Image 1 (spheres, rainbow, N blue to C red):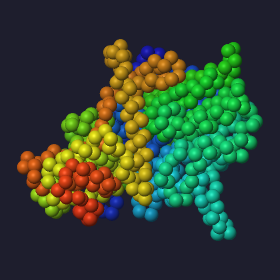
Image 2 (cartoon, rainbow, N blue to C red; image 1 turned 180 degrees about the horizontal axis):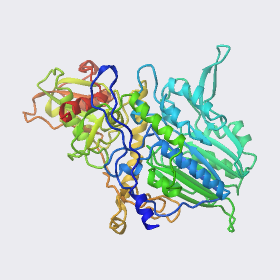
Image 3 (cartoon, one colour; image 1 turned 90 degrees about the vertical axis):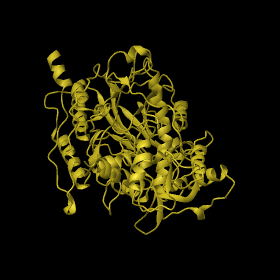
Image 4 (cartoon, helix red, strand yellow; image 1 turned 30 degrees about the vertical axis):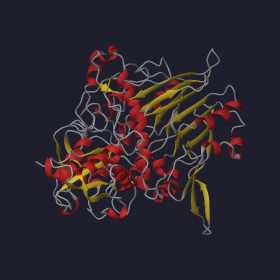
Length: 617
C-alpha cells in the first residue's frame, strides 16, 4: 500500500503532442501543451458517502484544460475536463456498487476566463466551441450564470442550443429571454426550464429550482426577476406545495454574505415543510464555502476556474431525526481523481476524447502562439502593487510604456493612472503564449489621454482616486457589455480577496506542518476548523489584504510643473475628470480635453506586445 501511494503521489498528468504550425503562414513558436511535471499531494482521507451524494462544479469560466503552469499552487488544479469526465464515470460506478444516489450539478458561468472560451475567431462568439465539451458530461442539473447573460448572441445560444442538451434539467427559474416565435411575434420565455421534478436512481423524489442573483446591465433580450419577486409568482407558490424527499436549490448566488438572496427562496419552502431536507448549491463569488441555514439544510459553494470540485453527501434520515451532511472541497487533479476512484485504467475513452478535443480547440484558436518567456511569476493578489512581483506594477511601469513606445505623445512624458481591474489573472514564469495573454488580460479597453497636464496634478489625480471614498467600480459605462462584466468581476474579486485574506490568519501549528501551498478553507460546516473541509491539506498562500483602486506609474525625474500626457482607461473617464478637477483650480477639464484617438492599442494587446519586445529572447 505504501509503495502504491508513493507511486500515485508522483503521477504526472498527461503530456500532449508536439508543437503545431501557425495558420496563415505565420512562423511563431508554439506552446507544447502538457500538464506540469509536478508530484501532487494526495487527499488526506477517503470521501464520506451517504444515501445521496452530489458532485458540484461552478464558475468554470473556460478553464477546461485545467491549470497548466508549474508555479505553486497551480498544479493542484491541473486536471483537464476530460480527466474530470473520467472521474465522474468512476464515481458513478462506485455509487451503483454502494446502492447510493449520485448527482452531478453545475451552477453557471461557463464563459469569460481563458482562451478556450474567449479566443474565438471573428464570426463566432464566446464559448461557442468550449460549451460543446462542457455539455459532454452527464450533468443531472445545471443553472445559468451572469456571464451567460451579458450579450444577446451568447444568451440566445444558451436558450436555443445549450439548454437543449439538458432537456428539463437546465433550470432558469428567474432568468428570461425575449425571442421571436414562428409567427414573427416577440415573446418572453424562460431561458431554460423554471423547475424540475424527478426521481433519483434510487427512487427519491426531488423538486429542484435554478436561481440567479439580481444581475445588472444584462443583454437587451434578457430579463432577471429578483428572487424576492420570483417567490411570489403563482408557479412558484404552486410548485412548493407538494413535499418531495428533498428540495434541491441550485443557483448562481453566494450561499451567504453580499448578494445572497437564498432566504427569499428558502424561507417560503421551510415555512411549508418544516422537516423536509433542503440542499442549496451556490456560486458566483469564486470561493469555497459552506453554511447550514438550519439543522435540516446545507448550502455549498465550490470555488471557481476549476480550482475546486465540490462533494456533498447526505443521509436523509438519522437517529436524531435530522439529516446528516458531509462536505469536501477537492483539488481537481489526476492524483485526487485516482485516489478517490481507481489507479487502474483510470482514463476512459470519453474522457480522453474530451481532452483531445480541447487540445485541438487550443490549436484552432492559435492559443499556443508564444509571445515570449516570462523571467518570473507576476501575481495579481499575492503581492502588493509596490512589489516587483506584482503583475499590476509590471503592467503599468514596464508593459504599457514599452507597448506605447511607438505611439506619438503630445508631451515629452507619459504618466499612467490605471485601474486594478485591467487584469484578471497572474502571469507565470516561463512560456507566455496567447492563452496566457487572454487569461491575464482579455479586456478591449481603450487607452485615452489628457495631454499636457502638470506632473504634480497627474500624480495627485491618482492619489485622489485611491482615497477611501473613491469607488473602484463606480465609473463603468452602462452601454458597454464588457464594462458590465468588469464591474461584476471586480465585485466578485473583492469577496474572493476577503476569503483569501482570511487564510492568512491560520494558526502557526498548521503553517509548521510543511504542507504544499493551497487553499485552507474555514467555513461554517463540520468542525469549522481551518482546512476541515479541504480534501487535501495545505499551507495557505499569503495574499494581500488591501489594494488601491488604481496603480500609477513612477513619475519622471523632472520638475513637478513639467507637462505630461495623463493616460488612463476609457471607462475611468468620469473619475479621472472628477479627480483632476478636484486637485487643482487652474483649469476645469472636460470631455473635450480627452484625446480618444490617442492609440489604437487596447489593453488586451499590451502584454503580448511587451512580451514580444522584452521576453522574446
